Length: 268
Image 1 (cartoon, rainbow, N blue to C red):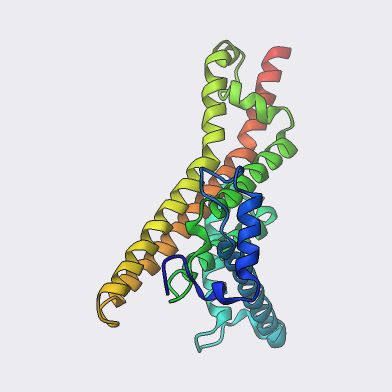
Image 2 (image 1 turned 90 degrees about the vertical axis):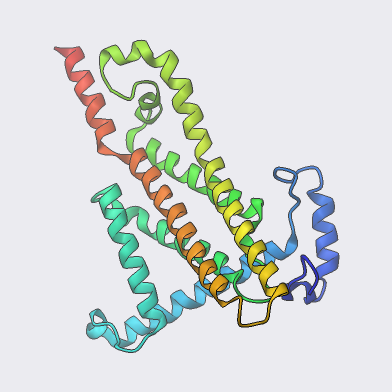
């Protein structure tokens, strides 16, 4: 296959849809990177794969009923999902606290989506959706809106006030003109860093793998496939753990406690 050509390129109507999408997004692409329909189709394929994995794992658990707590001895999709999500849930509990179950469905779904997007690039003839800026930016913007929404839901105006007065003390407001712009820029930089980190790493990993697959005999790229798998896992963990940290910071009880303490001092 030529550069930029995947199995999805042979779908009926692909070329017409590609030309239409490029014409519609020519002046509105992210960082000069036009939307490529194969990444949209690949992301849709990943959504289908994640849905099938979730349905299969759910059916296995329901079929075993009361014995579902004991995992089957043979390797299975259910084992893979349970081990991965159990570890991730433990991290979420440590970072967010007792409210972690409220946010874990989104965290777990995001982890599954990004992992399978990354791993799709290891399959010959496919490109990972996450090596395109538009895909990673969509995930990062969703994370940004999600943790800020819950920050406002939990703390109200205190979520914004905390950026101006992180210490939560009466004298902290004197530093607000200096701290608020710094905290605001830091907050706005989070989706940008998530976007660039994931896309750049997956773009580089896919480029290296494609180069070695085309230059050396079929068996020699196996170490690079293993290295690519490690990169896929690590980048998924980094993205999801940073998301969990951002949620934990946004909904931390210490925000409310600090402002309550400040109000108590003001009253006394």
